[in-house]
Image (cartoon, rainbow, N blue to C red; front, side, top):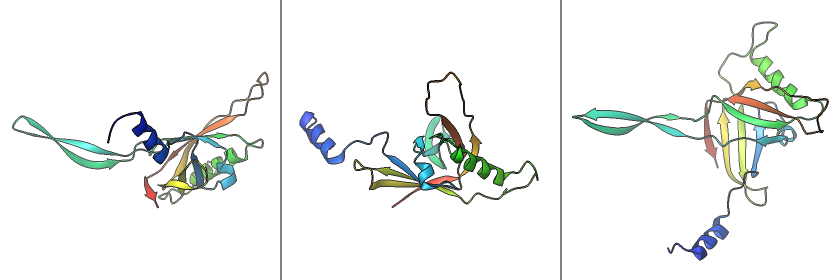
Length: 170
């Protein structure tokens, strides 16, 4: 294949480009699909293989080791806050199910909740890829900053989750 402008343009027409707004969160713990519409930013989790070095007579060899789900202890998303802080309250309630200050009890077992991320094409409806984050739970629900001299900006809250692993679904 020739490397020229026409070839690039033909490839772009055939394959399109991924855009930063082309994602949906279909499920995330106790949140409804309507709640998930308020999510504004996230990252698609990465994947790696640990490189193991083996030395033999002064030579370094590299062999694959175990898998690493990049950021699985620190997956951060940002939500716009709804007026009643209902989304934030659902996330805080989820945390309180895991550990209750009042009873010092909670759900200490292995998390069973999942999150489903759909990447969508240019029509914004048909998923091109679907990823499932398995064993997810909220680690941190961020602060919300108010300002009586503000300009009326929409408030956001950052939420950090941990999960065990992710898999791509078809």
